[in-house]
Structure formats: structure tokens, C-alpha cells
Image (cartoon, rainbow, N blue to C red; front, side, top):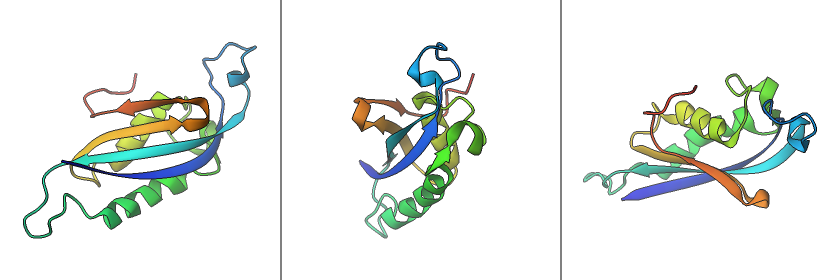
Amino acid sequence: MQIFKEFTFEAAHFLPSAAPDSPNARIHGHSFRVKVTLDGLPQTDTGLIFHLGNIEEALKDVREKLDHRFLNEDVEGLQWPTLEHLALWIWEQLDETLPGLYEVAVMRDSCGEGCIYRGSQHKKS
């Protein structure tokens, strides 16, 4: 069984790996949507996998670190703020706080794109 909670944030970035003539090489902004999924079975004493209010509190801290920031410079660890690194960074922020963390999805809905990250077996390169 899985439960999820979503949040949105606005942020600016540029992609250091983009070709110099690419718009992505210049500072630009996006509206991001993040979906965090937990996997587990409901606890017998609560009927819940995890209290959604506690998930919301954990996500609030992450959102505050990202919202209305210049990701390349304002957020430690996001000097390369690709969708892939954002998903991994968010996972690392939540991994010890949310038991049963299963998936972090980061979407840019206006671009029709996103990234899904499942598990810490993959490390940053």
C-alpha cells in the first residue's frame, strides 16, 4: 500500500552542462511539483502507514529550502540542479525522517517533464 503527499515550489536555475547558446545555460525559472510516496502497511494501532500531517511537516522544511531560491547558489548540494539531482537531493533530505520512503517525483508540468527516483542504492556521481 502506498500513500503520497505533494508540494510545489518556484525556483530559478541554470544548467552548467548546457551548450552556451542554449536557453538552459541562462538563468531561468520553473514551477516545480514534487510528489513524495511512502510504502508500507497500516499500523494496527493507528490504521495509518504514516500520519499525513507528519509527512506534510517534513515536506514543509524541504519546500522552504527550495521555494523562491536560485538553486545553483542558494541551496547546498544543488550546484547542478537538474531534475535528477533535485529528486536525489529531496530524497536525501527526507530519507531518515520518513520511514517507508518509496519514491520522489519532481515534475515541471508546464514543460511536460519530470524525474522519478526510487531508493538510495544510486549515489550522486
